Length: 260
Image (tube, rainbow, N blue to C red; front, side, top):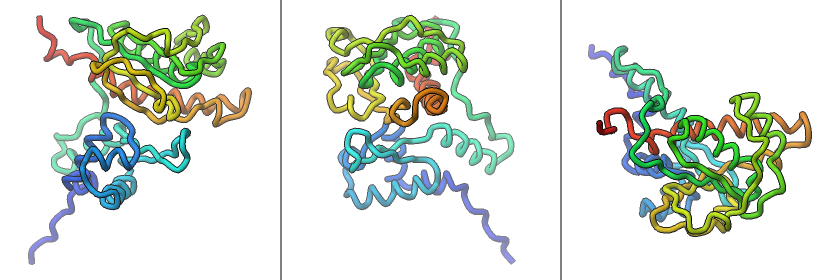
């Protein structure tokens, strides 16, 4: 009797479909709405929605209501979950192919030119300064990074200051929000919006800037004041830090790519 054939790991079954692989590839670059994915992959909306539903069921993709228009949802590829799924698929094939799903380490040698990154949100008081501080911290100054808002607040939110100090030993207490207008004329390699509202009004920084969107809710709006609201900032900082860790290898070449 012929033994039953082992089923391929769930990740392999999901990612092997050409359209689902294309959707994963598009979402690896940033968060998108369904209609934007339809345009990018050139397939009907009902077909794209069907395959997104399968990817969500497999835990690789999540959806979050837009804070700009609640009728819309942004889809996000969970890179951390993908890393674990890839590791599991490798182990299923052969124990020696398993690996620790961690991004590449930081370099001790700076790149030839420091890449420039701008993080944008509405108030520049929580999400974008958190992202700015974490990217600067994780790259040891090898990336020129700043943040700004379309309608900046008068000060950085106290919970943003606290979560960076307690969880990452970073002090931004002396930082003040800035307006996007103050950065016009500067060159950025990446302009990353963290707010659905600012994505609709983000200024043009030229064709050389790569526009990326991270749909992250405002922790100040999702929580109450004082100790009740602090956990929302902890969750937001953790999500931003995960995205930052997977951004770093795109900004800084690996040791094999650095020329002597």
